[in-house]
Structures are given as structure tokens and as C-alpha cells.
Length: 142
Image (cartoon, rainbow, N blue to C red):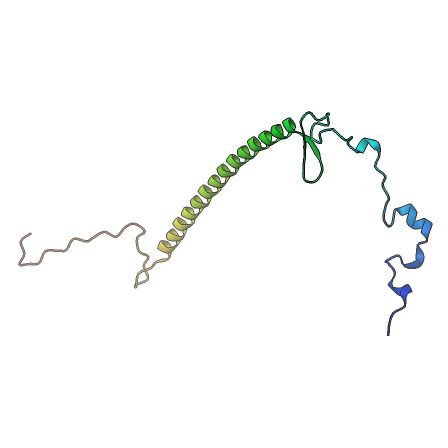
């Protein structure tokens, strides 16, 4: 069975009237932009000064050629500086990860050596195995 439209209204339902909605700013707001927020024609969008050698972007913004070159050079220097910082950070992170992997491998090896026991149940020495000298046989010269 279809529901009534009164049940489908917002969370406030029909409890709010037109004046109440206007007070809280419910709905769309109409904003008028003043003259101060609009750039006069013939002024650079970057420097806000009159354009010397005008260039127009595909979106219709007017720029001064010198301002664009200066902006591009500044951005290029900034991007190079950020690239160097990024590369040094990545190298540092890689070195830390390698150190961490070496430390984990050494800890795993130590744990393995500590956990090893011989057949009899006696722990084996942690150091490298030494070759025992064989006792000479009775018929061999010393």
C-alpha cells in the first residue's frame, strides 16, 4: 500500500513553517557578488594590475605574459625542491626498512639458535661448531 506524502517529508516533518525555515537558513541561499569580488576587464588575474602583454587562458582568464612566466619559474623551482625532499625521504625510509629487516633476521636467527636442542635434550652451544681432534689410534704415530 503506498504511503501518504505527509509521511515522506523531512526529519522535521510538517512541524516547520515557511518563516521558520527562512530563519534557520534551510534550502538554497541566494548570494549576490559585489563589484569588489569581480575583476575588471583588462586586469591580470595573478597580479591584479592592468595587463601589459595580454594572454588569455582557455577558460577566459586574462593574464600578463610576464606574470605567467614568473609564476611558472617559481612553481618549477618549488617542484624541484619538493622532488629533492621527496627523494631524500624515500631513501631514508628505504634505509630504515632495510635496517629493520636485518634486525628482524638477526632476532629470528638468535631465536632459532636458542631453541635448538640436541637429541639428548641438552642445549647446543650458541657459538660455531668446533671440530674435535680425533684421538690417534694405537698403531698410528702421534
